Length: 58
Image (cartoon, rainbow, N blue to C red; front, side):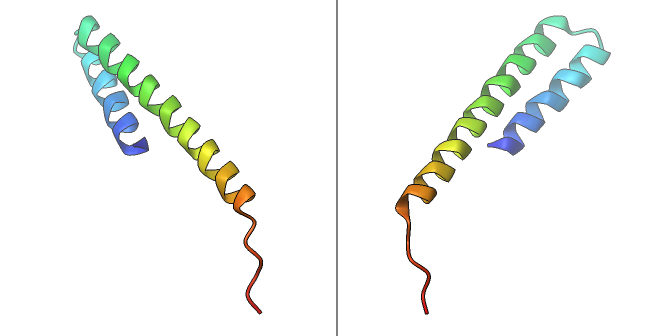
């Protein structure tokens, strides 16, 4: 998912360089949304892993 965010960010930069403001704005919005979804899923995964509390195998 982070790869998709980076891809849309690169598309936004290229579109902005060529003067396509609408496309750049849309791609930036999508990249920002995907980035925050990625961060939220990362935090949920870390919390779930911490709460699972498996004991180390001896």
